[in-house]
Structure formats: structure tokens, C-alpha cells
Length: 207
Image (cartoon, rainbow, N blue to C red; front, side, top):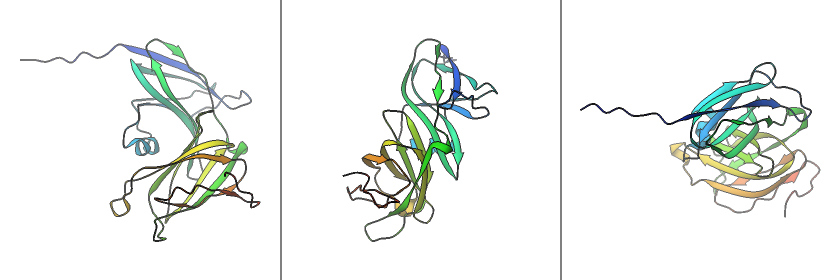
């Protein structure tokens, strides 16, 4: 018996990617992802979505997707850190226009620190992401010998830490309401809820 799987109806998402001044951003990928799974951070880092498109010189892009809900992300890599914008819960049921404004390195701050376990050991290979739910601004990096560096625009972020290293496995951890308003040092101990951050002038960034 032959079984033929019928593909779902496809729609087009198109638009332009610009900076906050309206300048077109060319030659960067716009990637669509299905709704988050346990390996979401890994897929983001590797750029493995269900569809992608590179922007043209005028910043235009086009994606072809089946009906469903998606996250759409685009940005640039700066100092081994992804800096961009992540738009969530994009409901694709018709052709649509989606223009995207992304932050650029000249308007971003450095957030750095050490990720360690409760015994004080640095955790290597942890995915560290920061997402501002209000603006969609997003940053992602991987810790090296426990040290991480994020480049991100000012805002209030949720930090998510995920590890896929067998030796240092830990449950996904979320730290909410991390206010970034300048270059910031933020050390994180896995399993502790303390999420205080200190900027380079010594001011506590959150309470």
C-alpha cells in the first residue's frame, strides 16, 4: 500500500530588516523556528530553523512557511555573541508582511560574568540567552571555562541558562527582570535564585 503525505498549505512572510534609524541591513539571515523545544537554545546557536532567508542589499527577505506558529529571529554575531531580535508567536495563516528592526553593536552594552555550580566550579558549554519580552531584543552566547559575554541593548531581560554537556548537566534555569542600562558584571550560580547584577560603576542594577 502506497501512502502519500500531503504537504500543508504554504504562505509567504516578507519584509525588510533595518536598524533603528531605518538603514537597511544586508546579508544577514532571517530564520523561522517552530515553537520552542528542549533543544531550542542549541537550534538557535546553530541557526537550524525550518526556513531561512538572507537579506538583500535593501534589507528585504522572504520566507515560505506552512500554516502554524513560529518564532522569527535575525541578527548579527559580534564578539562571539549573537545580537538581534526574536519575535515570538507569529501566527502564519496568510501571506503577511513582517518588518524587523534590530539593535546594532553601537547601541549595545557588554554583560559578562562567570557561571558556576554550588561548589564554585566554572561551567563550560552553557548556553546563556537574554530576551526582552517588551522589545524582542535577544542575545545568545556559550560559556567558555565558565566565562560568558553577552552584547545587548538596554532593557529588562529574562536570562535562560541551558547545558547539554554530560558532565555539567543541570535543569534549565530562568532569571527574570534583569535590568541592563550599562556595561554589567553578572555572576551566576546554578541552583540559586539570587539574580543581582552590578554595572561597572558599582550600581546595583536590580533589586
